[in-house]
Image (cartoon, rainbow, N blue to C red; front, top):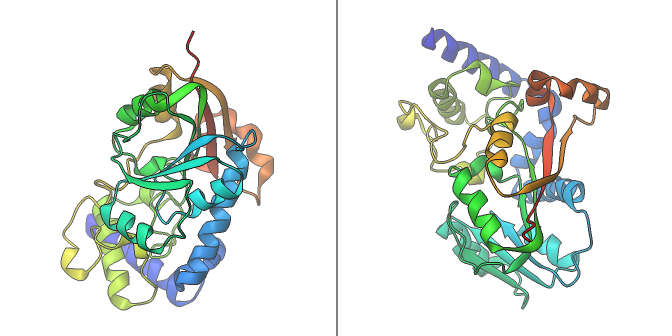
Length: 289
């Protein structure tokens, strides 16, 4: 069955890529073929999700950009009026590059942190932004405790992310443009297929994916491309984790795809909520008496 699955996954992916039959993936694939275009696509995606979670002005506030990556969101937060921005990044390589290439701003500091530890004092920030990052947090319970620790009373965590049931949750859309690929095929199959597609040089390589299982033909025997990269957490699983914390969930919205907004009423059914949500937004508040 595994050989048939790999054959089906590879054959369909190669056909879609070689014939440019990407449908809704065409814009993403085009962007990933050019660094500048990818940056533009990524900036717009972040801006959209930031607008979805931002509930009040940032003027005078101390904020955290959790999982800051290339620093795009940190720059947006400064532009929106934040008094101080701390960009937290777990990759030393990314952080070093960011410090060298990012414009110097007196109110922006990029810091090395872990996905379970943030190097900031207790009750020191007003807002924490976690945009398109939560799916990469492996120790979710620990980071929820850290967020609560560093927030001031009345502070909030604002989250935008896509759960494991999302059609593109595999993060392999530019190599395997098959919706729900992670639900259909095993991780081993996805890793091996991604490696084979790369070897054909049909599509450009994602800069942030280097070093993961399946990167080259020699890596095809790797079984778990998700290890240390994706937590495979569903919306329902995250909600259960939140219920065990001290946070008050003041808002949770599941956003339908822009091309079929009419399906929103179906989200009362867990299956449809998991698999048809474009992205989810949360506002978690800290209230201590």
